[in-house]
Length: 299
Picture (spheres, rainbow, N blue to C red):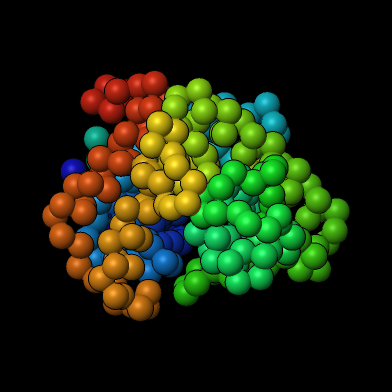
């Protein structure tokens, strides 16, 4: 069952993002509903990807439990029995999570362990990634000497922009910038270790943070195919973009079509829609060790 837009009776819709819709439960709690909308190059496509929202929700919930020892998060529960009654329908329950309300910090906290995407483009141009000077002679998809923190702006409409750590410190203060980097690198480390244990490579990912009761908390989604690059370790070969279990499959298709990465998005053929769903479900199954057909239980 696909969902392009959600509706929760009795709850106020307070935000509609590129993928998620946010409802007010009370002064301290929100309901996040992940739709099946797909965003690539910061443009939302008209065609949904079946099961995508449920994968994002269930996988994020699984990661939030694993990352809990690193510090506060906004996650409360994805158990249908703990959601507002109007969100306990089969369609909503699988893609909804109850979270604590946070004041978001307007920055994307990106961590890169490998050279890919916009980082690879910057390296070819300047020999740097997000202000980090890297060794000469690296190839696309090469593993970096160590994971690096490369933040970006958070754009509601249009493209996010990569910034340096110094620019982030100017935006949010040097102390907070340092804490964001430390938490992001620690979370990446947990994610990379789990991915490696399942035969995957976590090439890069992005996190978001906010303030809850004066504490810095991890929010939004974590370590999903929407926010990360997951490569198959068995097929990994530096020098090209490796096969992946994320939306790089869509990015490669639309880039090859000649699309200028501006609205409107091109139409995706059925084979690309089905292939994207398969990659998302595979990422869920390999990372969690759970079969997707058994995922009707709370994540």
